[in-house]
Amino acid sequence: MENRRRNPPRLFWLFCAAVALVVSITARAEALKPWTGGATPQLELADLDGAVHRLSDYRGKTVLVNFWATWCGPCRAEMPSIERLRKSMDGKPFAVLAVNVGESGRVARDYAEKLPVSFTVLLDRDGRTTRGWGARVLPASFLVGPDGAIRYSYLGELDWSGAEVRSRIEALMPKESQRAAAP
Image 1: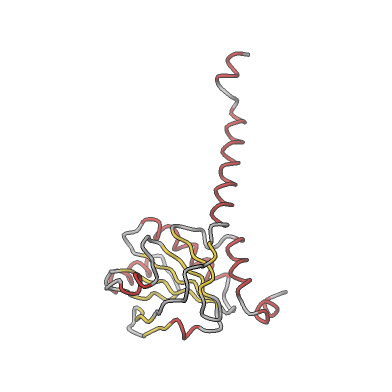
Image 2: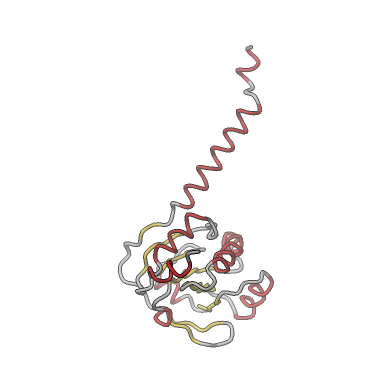
């Protein structure tokens, strides 16, 4: 009996691990913070092919703006979930603008092709846009509503393909697009 008190059964530890996992997943999904940082900063950057994209070009869509770099481990870890989210939102008014911070177009392109990703990769070589958005930690992500206003932010790695995150994104979309997508 005394031995059991010192060494709890394996099932106890498995239970503790399961609870920790659920708490971790729930905490991450609820970590999208409502935006209180004021007006949406400007975003006007070239993509990997040199075409200029402005955030204002995406009015009417919900946009995930994600600041990242290839040297950032958490950035690399969350990229596949961003691509899964993009695929799951195909046909809906949703876009991803992945802003590569401080790297060359070649480095960003090589990485994006290796994954591969189909969302738009923008280049912020001098970091001016990144600083304007207050992205002091990478990855830094912002959800922008169809009206062009930032609604949520998240600093750090997140599983963007999770159900809770997706439901928050869908809630930002215009009501007619949600009805059209319903089975």
